[in-house]
Length: 352
Length: 278
Image (cartoon, rainbow over all chains, first blue to last red; front, side, top):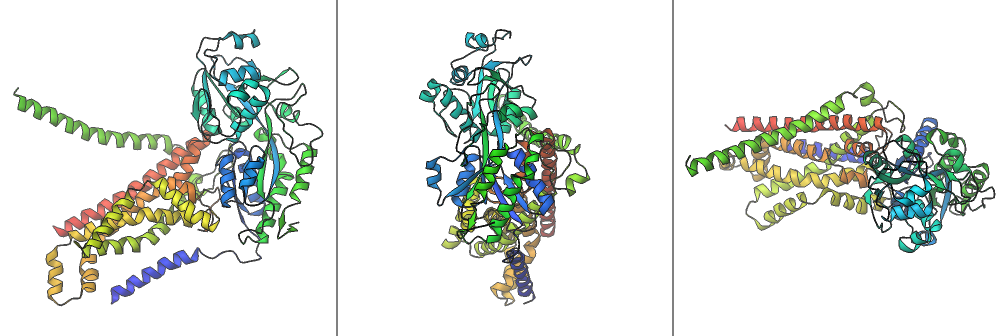
């Protein structure tokens, strides 16, 4: 009998343990937790910004660096509040989601092309050459096609090791979209997307994995978000832009790529923009969430918490971009983004 | 040397070499983790949440809290199921349904943890529309139950049948024999089984990737995303920042220490059981 009692007590304790965790926040109370997930491209920035937001408001917004395609999946499953992607969702991708979404740019990033060669020469390339290299047509670094663009550099006969991303990646999407737009051969042979059928090379995972692999491999060439190149002390190649000048990625060459007349819906591409100073592989990175937040019984307070966070990211949060080698939004884009955020609604009524 | 003697010495050498290799692998792993991890250990590492990427300082308190909460709740959920199933199987040896239960426990044990993770994502995370530590605990409980069942059964089978028969001869009911004789005799063994199972799930990463999600904040609410040591190691080891890679080693050191400690206490308890029996 005594043992039955003891058993009953332990069962009670177990259920209490589980039950205690089951208390949801009371209705009407401000929401103190949000889940954001997606892009590894913008991860260092978002982590820093969300941490600063936590210091300010005690709202625990977690960031999961799943990948841009992971963000789409999680949005589809409605398991996160906000997704982070590196390119605008295509109409087909939007059609897969159960409701319409808002896509809000938060900062500018660039894809850097990095090479590991003895002596770290400053190399120059154009889209046709990169297309040939990433197609596996260029076997060694002293190939004439490289030499033509780099007459001042003494090129070694090291074999070229092409690295590309193995996971569904927004960075890959930006890079291949650029190549397909700038080089007809690439467009015909490979195309663009988060995952493409690479004609050559070795696959690695994540921007971090790419940076590490380039550092380790002599003769390697790979593409990664600019921050990762800087953090890993890798030299970025100067790319020939549409105006014919060779430009390395930097905050100012990213900002130069943003046209002064960005449309209010922010649909224009930043890839391969004209202008002597613009770096050709530049992209906004985006936050994506459902336009009307009254789905799955979600509270209005949650929508308010989201609104507050995103509007801070577009306001004071912008100052955190520069120290991490991201470019903040140009003023015209920032205004347009804030207007767009105004469409966030709950049961059809604007949140704020 | 005769062929038989030659064979003997060759086999003897192989056996000894394998034994040495086994020890060497463990020593190399533990030693490497110790050397790489211990130099970055400091008070902040145990008491602070992570600093933003690229900044120095910060710790893994969030992950330590998460590992304890997630593992304990998983054990709390899994223990009754695992133990009761184990008692059932041990008490009804030879019955067809008991064999089916044992078979299922073995099969469940063989399910790869990544599959358990996807299961947790599909049936818990998507259903409740949120990543949470509780869904991680439930997923881990699915790994905890079969090991507990099998260990409970095996330990109960070690209870001398003479003891149980004596109790029956005194007129005790089955429930009384199970609780007062079998369980009591095997208590230390069952506890050591529970500890071993906990050690096993504490080191799991795959189910957590899909369920616990990870959080950089110290989180006590089981309904929210939470971090855990294996998850934090996975994320840190792949980060471009040297400071985080170093912390991954330290976190690995803490995790290995925790698991070795659990396993050592389990072994210690088993040793006590065997001494009592002798």
